[in-house]
Image (cartoon, rainbow, N blue to C red; front, side, top):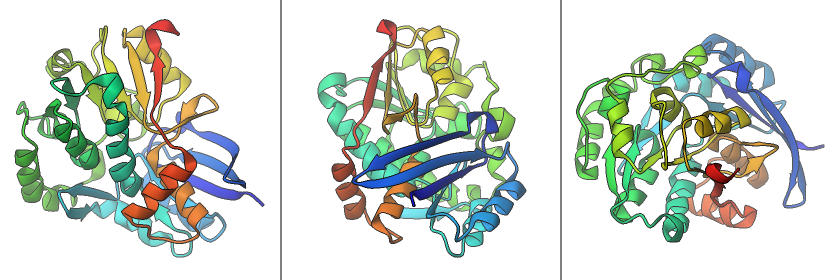
Length: 300
């Protein structure tokens, strides 16, 4: 019997997918089920499938965010995690921290990070990515106050972002998640406003796809997007805006790259135990050959 991985996503059901594959001699079924913004439906699905699948991924929402060495838990997502009594549930945060750091290092020769202007709309969701970009010498704009809270305050220093995170995350993680992040049908909507100027400043836009897509201006000629889960429709969206290059941190399977929550759940199922530490994730990243995938959109 193949190992069954199910990603329960608070996002749109239009992005649902099911893929069968073999990795390291084992068969897997990867499935994504969107609840169109319904936390109650997600809760029902987890309760229904608990103990019947090998691992859950939580998509469209974060269970944990990190700042420096501290971890913060979102109240609404913790309720879903408690419903998974038998099957491990992961949100991709453990894998993000290692995989995206490594992606920045591997991409150094192609991108040449030093002095590249990089916009990260939500850095606390991708703190490992943010740290790696800073270490690589990029000029990074951390857009958490701009895109997360709607405040026209750019942050250019990682140390300042970390201090603000220590101050604000204990409160923010108790708020309704939809106040902070597009869920359900909002993931399909675009917001074209004053925030577009930060895209114009950037050479590279990096981080969560839904944040990037939601605020992306109509013209993005010559720019690079570094993100995770993308579908063929997303690639068409990027081409229509003139994006030159798409880099995904997870491999493309049957036309789409699956989210880090799915890939982390796959690794947990492979390992047969949970939780895993950073060394475990690094070992499986190497064994699975997980590397960034580059698509030159202008030539496709």
